[in-house]
Amino acid sequence: MELIRPGTMFDFIGKKKFTVWVSTIAIVISLGSIFLQGLKYGVDFAGGILIQIRVSQAVDISEVRNAMEAMGSKDAMVQKFGGENEFLIRVEKSVEDLEGMSKKVQASLQERFKDKTLEIRRVEVVGPKVGKELKTKALWAVGLSFAAILVFVAWRFKQVSFGLGGITALVHDIIITYGAISIAGLEYSLPLLAVIMTIIGFSINDTIVIFDRVRENVKKMRKENFETIFNVSINETLGRTILTSGTLMTVVLILFFFGGPVIHDFAFALIVGLISGTYSTIYVASPVVLLWNKYFTQKKRR
Image: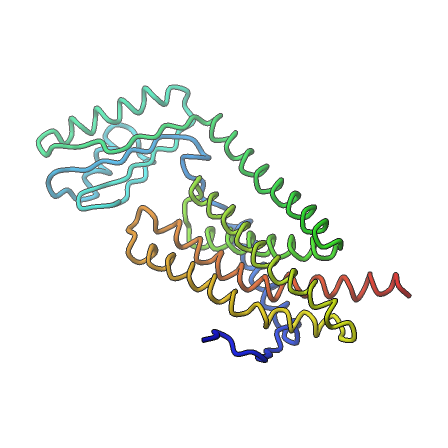
């Protein structure tokens, strides 16, 4: 049984003026949040100490905060994490001897909760230089991936417009995902960088599927205009898009609701990216190619 009946023809391209406004508003809101509120960098990029502890008996989160304040770490962030009586402590510091400070914090916590048996489950220490280096490498990773995709898509389809369409869709997805991270106040760490790279791969893969069908249909539908060819191509690949995006979304939603706090931020950012990536493949990448063809390619032919 076909997911989409043969001959189904939704006018996706006909809605491009409306979707341009939708995308513009979403991008403006996202950029506004990024520039005004900024990103909340985690220990991976800001540097500092991350300690995950578990106490054998019931402990209120205020007790852990008081313990950190007593040892001079008033800016430490404490949150419930994972199972019962389990906490995550972040101390963002730019001091040189982070290892020594980490041991001091662990020893102080052990002493404070010695009557309740405290277990140190995880310790991460990232120096400020390492954090800065990771941030730089993250920017390079995203930038180089964009450049490689632009060259590959333009070469594969023998048209610059296809490369520009794919990259415009990716920029759209990345801005909106970063905006969602900023608005939600999520901690931007290496796992969320992994989400960004995943979204880049997902979005461009879906875009290339449609572009491949367009290339095939250009040969079959020589008498039709470019907009009709794109509309037919999007409709012909719609079943595949729904199956791919729907399967991924089902898995990520399960992770979001049942995966616990450890993976909650990761799943949330991925949900936003998947929605944006599916939308941009149809309503951003394709219209950009059409606009380029209309205002540049056709003029050159004249």
